[in-house]
Length: 78
Image (cartoon, rainbow, N blue to C red; front, side, top):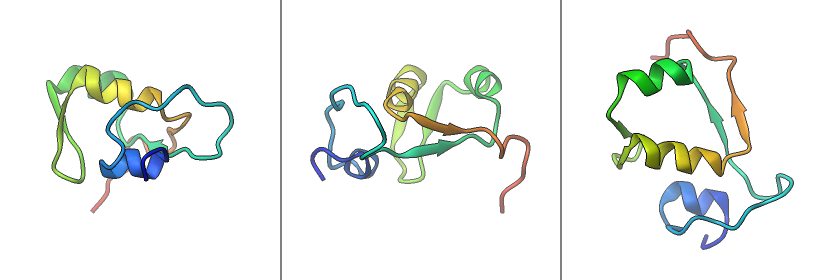
């Protein structure tokens, strides 16, 4: 859990991982809102675990995520 992307997402791995190549241990992120609109409408971001991030912290964390999906933009979730 100290070096995997799952450990990073769950908060066990708090330091930014070294630059990676390939997808051996990576997470994906699925956007439900266009990143530009998301960025403009938020000052702080709260994740599904209740942790809050400044915008820059959130986007820095996403920069570690090589797989970002955009097909859910505009869909509603219940």
